[in-house]
Image (cartoon, rainbow, N blue to C red; front, side, top):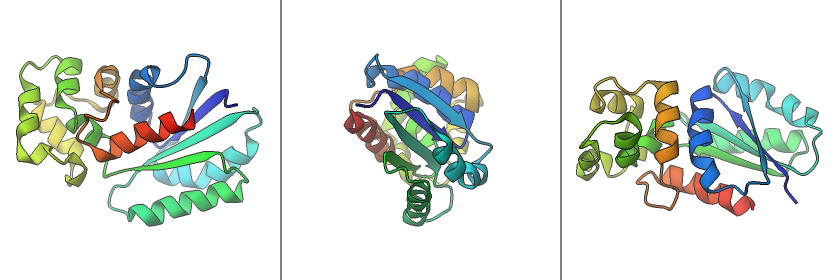
Length: 185
């Protein structure tokens, strides 16, 4: 029985987003912990040591990393190998298509509500935002459509509680992550 869910994150903004969206999908009795790294290289460098050193029983791990410009399958296989090296098979490895901001661009109603930008959700019908996982620079696109109101930490904190985890987000990557977390339980 899982009692603790630990997220290994490459950046603090992912923690802020997760803190907002997870209460709607994780049972109350589950303790959630966040371990943040100083970017993807730091995460990959320290992952085996952190996993081996974890002593709390009944723990499940979720490793989140942005794809950026890398090969998604190679990144995932590399992280899975590190989990095997640490003898931790109780791990979900998830690679965000491009960047975390694709989640927000897939649910512009959440951005509208979180950042208090009336009418922003109407842009969801624009072809550009129909498949946000394919965008080259989601963070830049989000900055532009919010007229610089989106800032990584405060924006993630504000938008996270409004993200819909019911499959209606247009970011396939976000929906896969939410399904994966639900499947843990």
